[in-house]
Length: 260
Image (tube, rainbow, N blue to C red):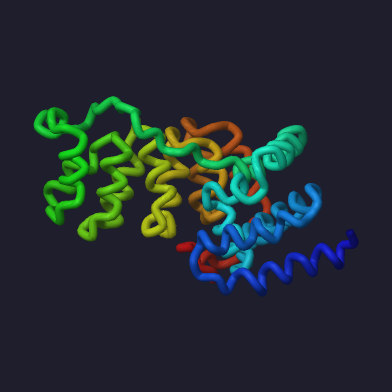
């Protein structure tokens, strides 16, 4: 396929898919278009979408944001083809693209997490009751429940209309924390669109690497530099942050929206 054909594919994707406002629908529409391409063409498109998103091109930020949705690649491409694509990228050490293709692990429903932060009363409260309490519009109770390390409780709390962005930042910055809690925030459409929430997950060393790598593309220059200054983060994340810094154009960060 010629470079002209490649560019026409990208242009068509941007024109036809960026108008889809729902992120999940946009994700499945994008992967459905990619399904008909050869494997090397799929990887080329993924590279270009990510590289152009890094440059702040808004259409490609929207396409890249669609690529963050868990489950679309495995459901549309199938496990066998997805495994072949991931293997090809791992051979070339293109871990930033591996992170796009590999799904965030599904939540485990029978997990009993360690609870180092709950007060005595809540620690002795059964899971079902804590899940119910997480729905109550009580600001003081929300701050207590926000310390829970059970992702099922946090899932209910994230739907609470009285929960604030500051509350979610505090949950996402907790250390140590259950990676399931961070995955629950990541998969919540109301909160993951906030730049501050993306940032707090990237900077949390307990976040799964694939999740942090996906979100790294959205980081501003000063926050990429903060990633490099954070010794507890994965070396692969450090390396990718350094590469992104080298590619980012010298431009005002507010020229494009980071809350996607």
